[in-house]
Amino acid sequence: MRQAAHLLAGLFLSALFLWLTLRVVDFAALRDAFTQVDLAMLALAPVALALGYGARVQRWRIMLRLHNPGLGFGRAGVAFVAATAVNNLVPFRAGDALRCFAFGRWLGVTPGAVLGTVIVERVLDLVALMSIAAIAIWLLAPQQPGWPAIGVAAAAGAAIGLLVLWALIHPNLAGRFVRGLSRIAARLGPKAQSRVDALLLPLSAALSGLGARGQRRPILAWTVPVWVLEGACFAAVAHAVSGLIAPAAAWLALPMGTLATLLPTTPGHIGPFDYAAQLATTALGNPLVEATVFVLVVHAVLWATTTATGLVCLLVWTMQTPGKATS
Image (cartoon, rainbow, N blue to C red; front, side, top):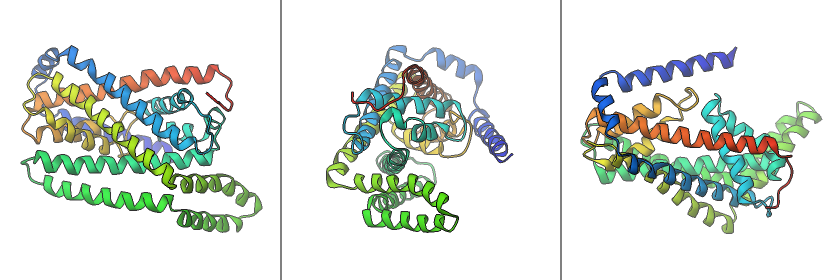
């Protein structure tokens, strides 16, 4: 019942934000603008996106190799992109649960350790997005009211995110937190404590291991191409749309649209992504119709590329016997 209520609320929010995106758009002009998209330039967008996902997979593989040194790029990539496709198609972030709990044998890593890497990955990406938003607002200087305050909030959010990341990977803090949860579970009985320990002890070890100096540097280093290449995907679409007078708005639409996907809406984040990215694009003086074409096309590229590739990865996973990989 609760899940049904959450699903209905998500559908409502998606419909509301999609209406806000399209409520004053001239649909005849929108259709004409779609026909003027430069397909040759547009073709660069999925290429940049694919390279960005390669960087994501490599960053995740570095984290996982702390627990399975023989893990190959292909196995990590199948799990990562398959989970992304599930998130695109199924509500409640089911792909994240699949990555943590269904791909353990495939990756040769315990679910708790995978969960630790996903948590660190999410915090890192939030810090990166908030940093990009703050820098883009500072450099591009949108003239509409409210943007300076958003820039300050984004910078503050990035700083807080770094503190949270430090706390997560600090060995003493992570250990204390897990021991506290274990003591609470012990009050419910030995079986409950055993289940909690089976998940949280590997999680604690994973988080502590990621805090080692040899781990921190490559993980942070690979986060840079992850978001530079995704930004290049947005920029390619912006340059493909005829009539955008400030295609640099792609670098503001990237963080604003992506951060809006944190709202609990439908799979694929229809509505919130589009409205936030549209606001960011028009804030730099781009015409509404062309800005709308840009956000709809970039959303389609993001969704279609990752979903199609992820479904192939799901097929590969289901056709092979899961087990610990060494290549």
